[in-house]
Length: 329
Image (cartoon, rainbow, N blue to C red; front, side, top):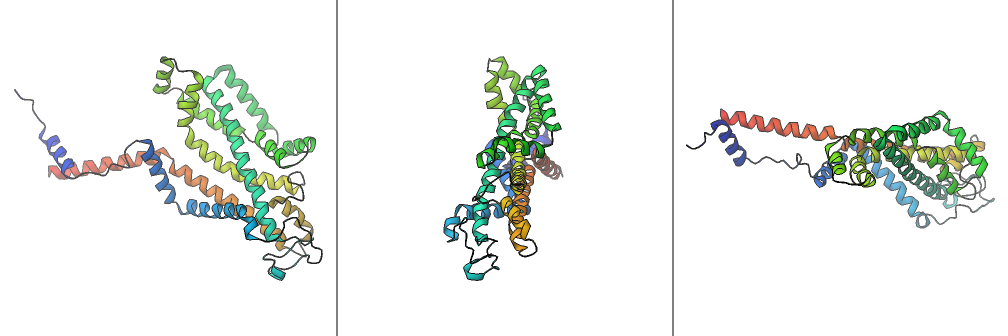
């Protein structure tokens, strides 16, 4: 006797076969998920605008020697405090005759490199500590988290000033100091993520077949914690630029004759009444870059939000149900 068939399910199957549904957004392949995230990111006008602004700053910093004929450290006492556009100086000159536009371009190199380098090193340190703490737990977790609590209890600005005063100032020292004093947030984030991921079945399966702890952390857990780490890294760039600007403003960061936006603000504070635009330009650059990075971070967070993919699956399921109900009528 042939098996009985449900006429409703047969009709639904024929309807779905006759009217194919676009399920590319509902598939779970890694390439497709990144494609969905990219499309979601491009639909965010603030994220796209921030990316364009940040790209402009990066390109102008890289192409600085071709965009201006002046030396950022050249002193010209015959052309001091010139207004914008005078004698070929696009934004004028400062108190000792240096071209402000040139110093903005070369200062952007220092500030952006510090921002991205500190973000990379901070994420690297925080991810390593948070991964070990969250995966092993127990006394390892207790010791590492108490270290995080101790670091968080110290005012970072005073700690940075103390280290810079003891070991000197400079480009490399600045990156090192900001990296070793700002990793705590990343460590807590990664630890919380690992506490959830280590209980997954694929982790238990990897342990059962004898995969080492290091391989599980690197090949499985960190790959699944990439999204929050990337979002946090983008936000760290803006914080690092602000920290560099603050230390340079206090005279403990980048030192002359190098140029940075924070150092330009520090030099311009004594000439606010005579040449206020000298302080406006680097402050505006810092504002635009930090806002751009923040918008990019928000856009990446929304694009990688797993709840967005759940909404896609739910919407596709509703479409199937509607077509199934129509086919019955």
